Length: 234
Ligand SMILES: NC(=O)c1ccc[n+]([C@@H]2O[C@H](COP(=O)([O-])OP(=O)(O)OC[C@H]3O[C@@H](n4cnc5c(N)ncnc54)[C@H](OP(=O)(O)O)[C@@H]3O)[C@@H](O)[C@H]2O)c1
Image (cartoon, rainbow, N blue to C red; front, side, top):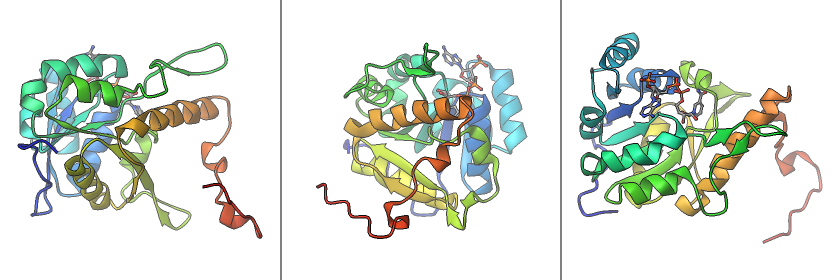
């Protein structure tokens, strides 16, 4: 955590700025408004920002800099290949805040969608963290289709939706946990930003499964469902 990094609010009401005015901005922003948070939608097109803000009942709208300066947390809801440059441009305003990175670095490939990062230790989240070093960054909300966030209460097979995240600082992790819980979901900490490439790759894989007609949620049943199963790997 940097010295001036904002902490999660004690009041339960969080201030969130959104960079972007499209599907994810509206879906997640709407979920946060329903959860009682204050949201400001920011875009490069002010008319689009105003339309999205009005549609979800946000507290306001503005440009990217206003949205970055508004939030204790700031959602990056622009294309993955634009996100690091935008973070660099907004770095002074993002200092001390948590950047929630939901981007999926994906492009069409011969066998299905492919990662546009190098994979390994490279991720959009790490690039954002390098571009805005005074911000805390969390990779989160990129696994599910935007429609999931429009549900009043995302509960499936009797269990609240688990939301995996990787956070670069303790403050970003605490803020992300608080935000996910406030949405009626279950936070699933998955480590630091060094593991963000796994979340980005998981999103690309899941999208490829859906596009090929498969059902990603059928892919990972718990070993506990197989009687006698033993997993003795460390
Ligand atoms: N849609 C999903 O279900 C989903 C799920 C998980 C993750 N994601 C990720 O969430 C992010 C946003 O997706 P989305 O579906 O909300 O996209 P979208 O509906 O196309 O909205 C994209 C937003 O980014 C802005 N934008 C586009 N190019 C830009 C640039 N070069 N610089 C700054 N702003 C730019 C657009 O502004 P203009 O209107 O001015 O072009 C728009 O406000 C993406 O990284 C995507 O991978 C999406």
